[in-house]
Image 1 (cartoon, helix red, strand yellow):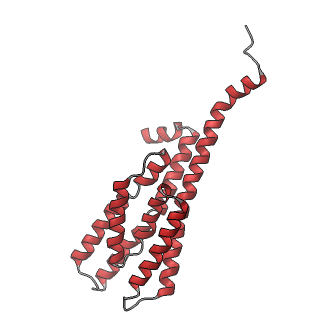
Image 2: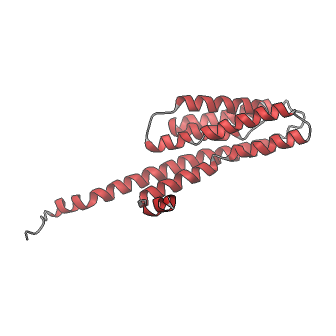
Image 3: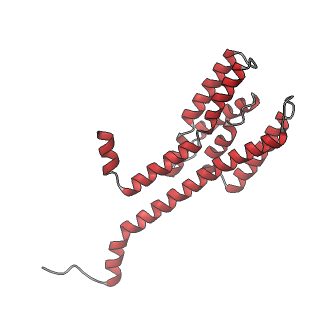
Length: 195
């Protein structure tokens, strides 16, 4: 009941903040597809269970850490360099193992803390480099992989940047609304009537 009361009694701006955060978390869960891919590889005997276990552990650490940077960006705090470095390393290790799903999410984690031109350049470079690397695989399908990776990269990066902008606009509107009554009374020159 305490959770229900907390949600019911929260201010409108707090509810909007929660909605933006949890919608972004859903987008950042795209690497969850990697668990299914690891299962399929294990089932088809492409990889051994210790390799699958390491992959699952890396994905789990990545998923846990990936919820922090967007919250930090919403609060306007400094770039979480350690989290970005760890998640970036995990994304590269998983990409080397053929897992494409962590790279778009990592780019989305990075997006609020760099310039737009930088995130576009890094996104394009990641798509090109991963496809060049994947071209050495025997069952490589370049058109499908480029489409999938481009779609997930655009979805993740675009959603994070759009949600962050939405939060900034919401916070500015809320701050302006709080200041409006005092500004209006000063502007009209009206003083409180004496009783």
